[in-house]
Length: 299
Image 1: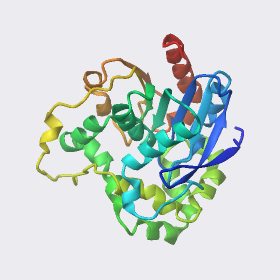
Image 2: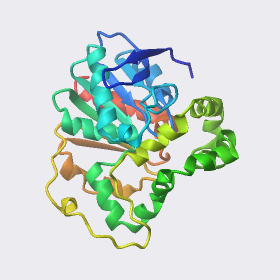
Image 3: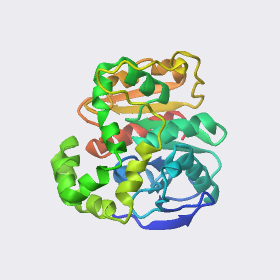
């Protein structure tokens, strides 16, 4: 896949982001947000294809690759990347846009859609749980709670020392590569290692977990249940496409249960033979789902 030229964009939120921009700015805008532990390259297949008909913008989010990595966990609470998103759209002169997010990028996309309905016209989510369903499942679903214990490990302030002890290439080979098809990962190995090796990158990426308010009870624990989990929750008002790789071992199918009650205008596309990293595990299926849905929605 091609390497995309990145534009360095300073934002009034205090960070500078490297941003892949492709396509004609006169075309309908799509903004893509990646998650952990990736970069704009999560969307490399979609950028190459969709930029023929859309104005495609895909930043390296704060803390990742060569984008700014502000010190302090407080700079990675979800409101900060939401602010970056809106500031980036403003900088590029984009008013309304379709927002596409995967993993942490999807978490930010859910929040942004709820908080900025006047800016986000349509929402596309790829293997990223709705905030209410995710937090509820961590209390109520033993399998999802067990699958999410890695979040507690990532929040451990000594995790970087663990990675440093083995070295980033070994960490990639022994940890990350177990969660996706090795044959698909192999061509991207050098890119991952180069991005993770940037000064402060490992801490920046992990701080997304540390800055989150999501509660991950220990397996077997019976914590007090927050009342808000059973109270009213605002609906997502935008037309929403959710694409889900059904072999995701970190985010289980329970994340799809009851989603239609929180997202009234929901289209769900299940990709049975893909896991968490479905944007590049099954790129053709993801791109087709996006194209078909946008065509029905008038782009």
